Amino acid sequence: MISLEEFHLIRDYIEKHCGIYLSDEKVYLVETRLTALMFEQGCKSFRELYQKAVLDRTHVLRDKIIENITTNETYWFRDLHPFGILDEVLFKHYADEITAGRKDKIRIWCSACSTGQEPYSIAMTFREFMRENHRLRPDHIEITASDISSTVLFIGKMGRYDNLSMSRGLSEEFRDRYFVRGDKVWTIKDEIKQMVKFQKLNLQENFHHLGRQDIVFCRNILIYFSTEFKQNILRRIASLLRPNGYLFLGASESIIMYTQEYEMLRHAMGLYYQIKQNEEKHHAYSVR
Amino acid sequence: MRILSVDDSAATRQFIKKAVDVLGFEFLEAADGREGLEILKRENGRIDLILLDRHMPVMDGMAMLEELKADDKLRMIPVTMVTVEVERAEIQRAIACGAKNYLIKPFTQENLIGKILEGLNIAP
Ligand SMILES: C[S@@+](CC[C@H](N)C(=O)[O-])C[C@H]1O[C@@H](n2cnc3c(N)ncnc32)[C@H](O)[C@@H]1O
Image 1 (tube, rainbow over the protein chains, first blue to last red):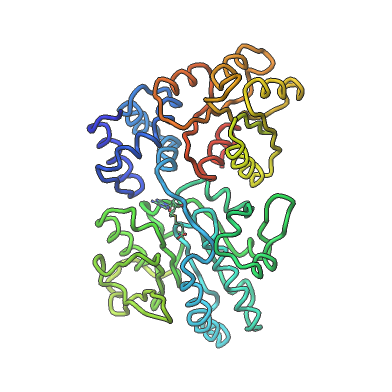
Image 2 (image 1 turned 180 degrees about the vertical axis):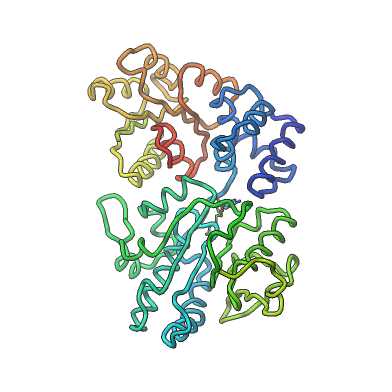
């Protein structure tokens, strides 16, 4: 078994490099998820694995450790409400701005996109909105999807899903409209695929190169982070958002304890957050 | 790419097949080591990766791995060992014997796709 001392080395390493905090009950998780990697890397102990990771400047080993620890659970239109809010409130609002010539495009960042279900659900929601609002075109929206794991991004970029993944949250109507049926898997149509740009990004690192966003999805990821890291990320997202920008969290997540920078809004049964105006001027970052 | 799954559990083979389908690769299967070796002979070694269950009747994963590594025509095919328990000595032995990597059950489709890409030396 992994010793407590080794566990603490690995735990601190993981927290430092991806923000995920593992409590002492997670000893077993580290043992089961990383033992194989330890031997694959030719190490005889977790201490050796840790030392090898620290010395590895390519970050290949770091990324493997992180991939083994993360949970990628996701599905189509998860929690439903965010997509209802996009359709009924936010897209409507931005469509008026665009047609009045006050806005170019809606910029959305999906910040822990896993295998693509979340950003593609946003893209499908926009396509549906376009069916009723003929003034809008696909290039009126820009969806950036990012994750720390190269493997989930690879799957998202392929846009290929088996029947089980397809059955989770996707209506038959949307499936038939936006996917092509193969003999074994379903592939998302190019009209949706082209609306989403995937890129590898660690929330622990600076993300200002993404440019200012109207809406950020940061769902079912903060729960894994320590309080300080949650606060840190929420602050950095606040400075990335455009004035009046919006933030979506997972259904079971709340940020009230961590920040005062957002105002909680309600629509139907769903919650979302808007950046408070007066906080904006305190941010040092320049507007792009 | 052609992936061979050698596993006595039909459910596991089915699970692996799904991931291989998502990747768009070809899938072949065998229920034990003997059958696995027969397929390799039949296919003239034209397999790009073997996912090999550790515990099986007739011929288990370790025995098949040893035969593969002793065969000049087959030794280059990367092998991913699959097992239920984290048995340090076992894992160490399989890696020493030439297995490329190890997959511990239960695993998700993403874990599996990650290991398949790693086994094939494809950077995702
Ligand atoms: C549970 S999934 C949530 C997926 C999606 N947002 C949803 O709600 O369905 C969490 C994702 O966060 C990613 N992740 C974990 N730590 C991260 C980090 N530091 N930076 C970026 N992504 C991270 C994981 O790889 C995983 O794909």
